Image: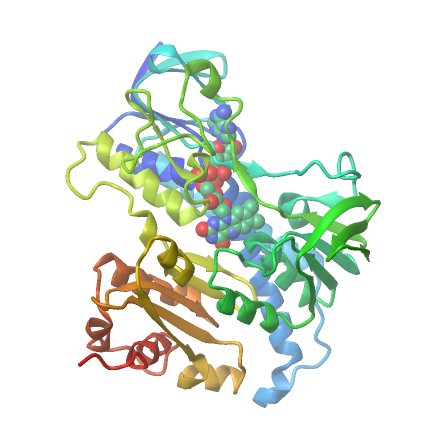
Length: 452
Ligand code: FAD
C-alpha cells in the first residue's frame, strides 16, 4: 500500500489547486480524477461557455459594426468553427493544469477514488493511505421529476447543450439562474428564438431585484415567462402554469437548468459517516467531522462557483500545511459574476439580506452612462447600473452590484473593499483609472448623501 501525505479525490478547481499548493510545498500528493482534469469548470462549465460567448459577441458586434463606422459584409457564423474554438480552448487549459501538476510532482490517476476507514482511499482497485484526504467531487445537474423529462432526447442539461451538432431554431430554457441566463445570451445572439421559463418572479434570485431586472430587460431577443411553473414536457413542448392559467412553449430543444447539487454519491460519504446536509458539512477551515478529512468546492454546497472552490482548496491546503491566523474562508466576500449580455457581478450582501440580519443600510444606484468608456462603447444604453450598499451609521460598505460590460473584471476591487471593511468615505479617496467602467463605483460612492 502506497502512502501519501495527501490524497485528493476530484480534479476540478477545488481539488487541483489544493494538490498544486500542497505539492509545491513539498508534500507527496495523489490525485484521483476519473474524467478530465479541470472538472466541470474547464471541461463543461466556466470555460466552454465563455469561449462560446466570445464567438457570439464577435458575431453580434460585426452585425452592428456600422454604427461604429465599420463595414463588415456577409457576416455569418459557422457552428462547427465555434465548437472547434471552444474545444481548442478547453484542451489548452486542461493541458496547462496537467503540466502544472506534473511540474510540482502530483501523481494523477485517471480513476474514481473511494474513501475507506482509516483515511485509506481505493483508486482503481488499489488501496492507498493518506495522512490527509481532500474530497473535491464537485456537483452534478439537478434533473427534476417532471413528467416527460426522463429519457427525453429533446431535453438536455448544460453539458448536453455545449456539444450539440446543430443550432436549434427555438430553445426553451427551464430556469432563470446563471446557467440558464448565460445560455439564453449565447443562443439569442445567434438568432435562436429563446424563451426562459422561471418559477420565481425575477431571474437571478440571488441578485438585488432592481439589478436582476436590469439584466433581464437588457437581454433583448429573449422572452421570459416569470412566475411560471413547468408541469410537463411533451416532446419539446414545455407546458407550464402561470397565475392559475395553463400555457405552453413550443421549442426544438429544451435546456434543463434548474440548478446543480453536490456530488455526494460514489466516493464513500455515507459508508464512512461523513456529516452531510445540503453538501458535505465543513467549517470555515474546510474541516469535515472526520479527522484529517477535508472537503472543498461544490461538494460542500456552500458556494457553487469555481473561484470559491479555488479559495476553499487553498484554505484546506494552508490548514494541512499548518494553518495560522487568516486561514479560513470569508463567505460574505466571495464575488459572483454572470457572463450574460449584459454582464453582471457583485459581492457582499443585498439590502434584503441586510434587513434579515438586522443591519440598517443606505443604498445608492447610479447609471453606468456616467462612465466615459461605457458611452464610447455603448452610447446612452440604459443597461448599466451600479448599486452600493453601506451601513447607515458606520458607512462600512456591505455590498456592491454592477450590471454592465467588464463587471466581472471590475468586481474584485469591490471584493477588496469589503474584505478591508472600507467605508464610503474611504472609497471616495481611491483613484480609479479613466475612462473605465470601474469609475461607476466612484460615481456611486460620491452619490451617497453627505455625512456631516
Ligand atoms: P468540479 O469542477 O465539478 O470537479 C469535480 C471533479 O470531481 C470532476 O472532475 C469529477 O469527475 C470528479 N469526481 C467526481 N466523483 C469522483 C470520485 N469518486 N473520485 C474522483 N473524482 C471524482 N463558476 C464560476 O465561478 N464561473 C463561471 O463562469 C461558471 N460557469 C459555469 C457554467 C456552467 C455551464 C456550469 C455547469 C458551471 C459553471 N460554473 C462557473 C461553476 C463551476 O464550474 C464550479 O463551481 C466548479 O467547477 C466547482 O469546482 P469543484 O472542484 O468543486 O468541482
